[in-house]
Every structure is written in structure tokens, then in C-alpha cells.
Image (cartoon, rainbow, N blue to C red; front, side, top):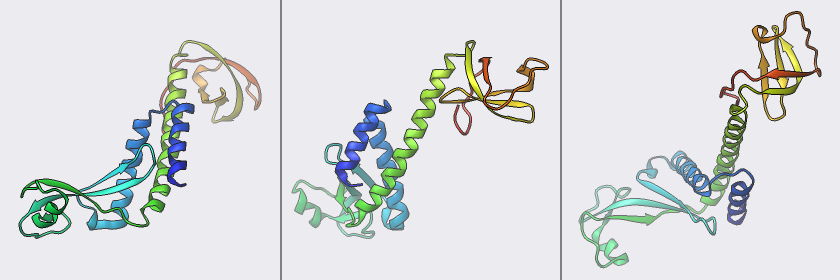
Length: 194
């Protein structure tokens, strides 16, 4: 996935799934930061990652303090070097130095893909939950998928519903592929979705 594909994927998710571009970009930046820290270890102190929202380019910045004499090069920068960038620099000022590694694009692409897939799943779960939360008290039609330990598992399209024994009609049998009308008593968020 190159930078243009990343931006295209973000825009597509924004349109198709109703996800905010800001939320996606922030999630990708946070994931890139954790990927950077994992790959570069102790050199990753005081790091900020920025994803260009137009080009998709990723930039890694090291946040450093301007000092007279450098004791820790990962958190400090000498005044003489800082004055080369900005003649107004003073000791104690905070500056950001770009430290983007050469192979960071590959790391970024892998991480971005994982984050995007995860965010899509979360957003879809939320949308399904909100859709069915409003259907509590309604009658729905579903297809029996399986019966396990007297509980009936029904497919309602984008969601799986459980019909526990206490909610079933006495002496009524349920077989796989039966069409069943059911009353929605409760909608809950589970670990695998609503």
C-alpha cells in the first residue's frame, strides 16, 4: 500500500462506512507511533508521528530541548545546531527534528492496514448495535442456524441472535434453516459484536 492508496482507502472508508477521516488518521498515527517504538526501541523517546492528510506521507519527529551542552542526544539538541534552523532559538526551547527512517513507509503501510481493518470492524459492530438497539420490543424474522444446549441461534442478516430456553414457546421444536419470528427482548454488546 503506497501513500496514495492509503489516502484513497481513508476516503473510501469515510464514504462507505461513515467513519470520520480525523478518527482514522489519529488511529493510524497512534498505531504508527507504537510500531515505531516497537521497531526502534529506546531511540523512540519523545516521538511524534504526523500523517499528511493530502499526500499520505508519514513523518517522524523527535521532540527535543535546546541546550548548551548535549547530555542525551535523543532528547536534546545543541543551541548551535538549532540556530542553523531558526536564528531565534533559545536554550530551553522545544523543537521538533524530523527523524523519519528510510524504510518507515513499509512499516507504516503494514501498521495502517491493520489499524484500518480493526477500525472497520469496530465501526461495523457499532452501526449494527445501534441499528438493533432501536429494535428492542420489535418482532423480527430470522433463520435458525443451530441449536446448542437448548438455545437457538438465529441469523437476522447482519447479526446473530440467541433464543434462550426461557424465551422459547414450550414444546415447539426448532430445526436448522427454519424461519422463525421472534420478539427482541434485549440487545447487548458482546466481545464478538452485538
